[in-house]
Length: 290
Length: 71
Image (cartoon, rainbow over all chains, first blue to last red; front, side):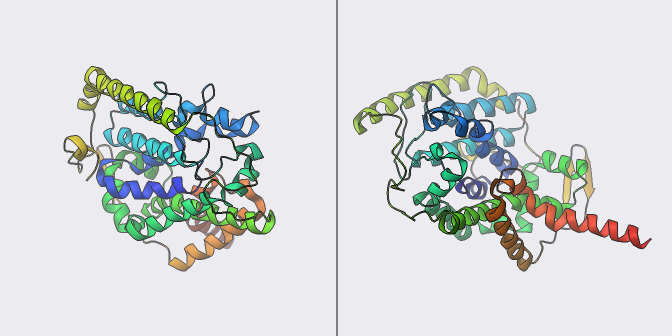
């Protein structure tokens, strides 16, 4: 699993969608896969299988989970910017978690084959704190740093007050307006709430890394498949070719499923959906990216 | 900023971000608290709300209490 990378990605995604997706929805989408399951993962007898496998709650780390979530949001709120935000936030989480040894089932239920590049070990079997220590002793911590640097290099302007005013709020005026009225927060308070996700990512990355080095004295092993002191926990013994074939078939079936859903249900929901006044949404990829 | 809320528009004071030093100081505090208290502060609820709580809500509460004591 990834830790602070999920917070930094939000701003990077936001930069590429601009007015066309709600930042709050992107944040909720990235939290989505672990929101209700993470506490149970650490209490499970087989955390990796429970977290990412099937049977288990691994379906939360699949593209269809984000699609269902976005569809429900679109059907109930009619907000396109929220539906798009939930979808891309959840999908970004799925793609990011391909990096650890447990992997994800992106095309569940059409393929239950975990897809992983094994960059670092999924270490939930060590408990919450052991998991954090292992993550920040491996390439996982480097992955977080990479996303922080990406944010700093290419998307730092998304953290400025002017960007918040000109893009973040106009992309989702209903939610920010609701927070403004209900919590009686002026723009500065809302800005701090918006910047808070980045602050949290940076803070927890630093704190867990320092704990791993000085409190737990775990060896820092930023090598592929590290840290070595954690036992391997791959969920599948399939070879690379098997994984490619099963995932390819699952992916093709998923695409057919999405096209069918679009023609039967989603297009109707999308057409009756609403955009904030400042959003000029095009067709195709231009409906999401600016 | 115009925070649009349905049919109504409401003009509010323009946002000014706190100085960079405030963010840095707060980050040091948050990391120290996280190091000592772990998931008590390093969680999905406290973490994202920490900036708002310390840089906005706390000064307002303290200011209100201060003005109440003075009055």
